[in-house]
Length: 481
Image (tube, rainbow, N blue to C red):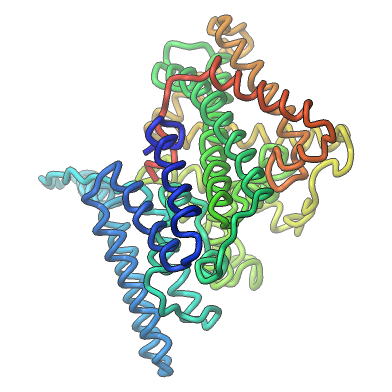
């Protein structure tokens, strides 16, 4: 069930009415409605994989209870490893089995040994990478005694399967989301209105920016040998805005929807394309995943402490794992390695925390220095996205080779009137994102406009753009991860 579908437009009001008008006086019933609604939402894709969510939820629920009764360190570690192996075992099988088999066969063929093997036709369950990490965070935090294990099985199952963020995040920590299922929730009009604003902007990002950019990005990447260098650059830029509009748009809709039900999810994107270096970019891009890897992988490895060799090792591990999390393809691993190479000089010169504040805070425009730094960082990001989007490493290399051909400075023949309209919409998008960069989300500061007439005019413009310039409906990119 896509957020930008008629199905969801019918589903959401029904659940909202039942939740607030029928079950509003019973917390357990509200949580049970969330569980049922979440399973219906997930089953809309493939009901067969509900068993995975149920099993994963039950395992980690029981692991949490067992940890609470166990003081022996060795047995506590054994329980944690059961959770890790079960969750990562499912993830590894469904997502990486064929990748390892194919590369195993290729490795032997290099030495002249041919191995006959058939790949399995494995369907990747939607959202498995997200809810797996969410349940793992619970087991790890309970093991580290940062969180009291819950005895409320309905609240726990609701935490794992919470439908707004079930299939593409944000990846919520148990320490943040789970306690919200214990507390009585009352309808908050101001919170709901703010959630609607965020949903509106998320729909604009997805339908107008991401889906329109996808049409051109797909056409150019799928036929890259037919285009000039300048057009290939344009294709990479289109994909850069496609993936941001697509993924951050999903996060905005998810966070906004959760606010309609009285929940607060963590911010997942903070205008990352206005970053002044790669370190700042990774503090602002897919924040829930970046902080997950930081807290559960990078810091336990030693982080930025220790010898120079350890620092380099830890940076490469974190970025390679992050790349591999995105998919079973060498392109994602190279994308991760490239970002590690971007990040290392900043870390080794101890400049990785130079830009913790918002760019041009309380100012209308950035300084020339900030503009240059943002442009340079954006260029590095666009280049890295080529590997992320390419079908294979050879495709990425051919694409980059095509960019730096003699046709790089030729005027692109792909600049039709429709393309120019999409570029103008991107410019409008950048301006609005810039104006709203200091808020928790882009439209969160609109309430400061005193005259309601101006606010409603802006909402009307966004709605008109959504209806008049919607691209061909595309599935959210991160569903495949």
